[in-house]
Image (tube, rainbow, N blue to C red; front, top):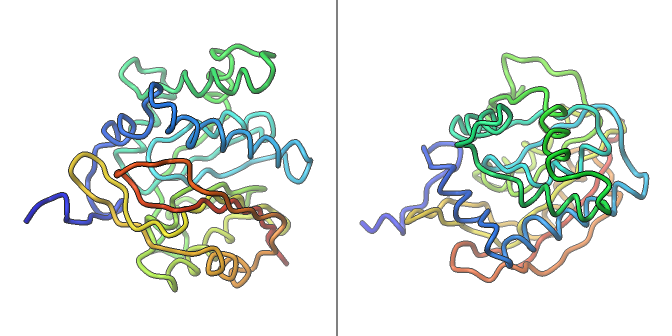
Length: 260
């Protein structure tokens, strides 16, 4: 069987995070940089600068050793806890935190955020600020009631997730249940911030296709509400990525608050 037709699962199959980053984090690929670094960074800055949420501790829940978006969060949260379900991704993140020369480079993202902040800090200072803010990198497993078992985390003020729940949820019922588990990590009144790929079924790394649960915006909004959240802000925009590597049509950006 052609391996390119064999869909794998992010959390079940060993994959190469370096190949993932080489594919989707190439600083020379303007389309990908715009779609995955610049535009999300601007949207996050806009929502945070509005004063909706800030302070304390946040949890980051993203597929792969992806850190670009976190340069925005360091201006609004004192502590960042990174969760990931793939050992290979965790290893790469820890290498970056140690400033390992073989780690995935995020200098291009740090440079973009430095410009976005009006040059108030250098990209080197932005990287150092993020390294200091990330206090824990933990393995998570959403098949468990406590995804970070055996660790017990205190509830946090914000959980950010992008392209993750769709990668680790086998069906729509599991997706809604996983949103409830995300809610268990939050304080009452804490915020959930999501970037959700709409109508996406796969993404490619090398010759392999990795499965993604296809969702639409109506389902996502309904699931967030059923999981105990109130929607604060939502907007959908057309995906700027035009590639054979993945098939999402739109991106849904949602901010929700955990109800009592």
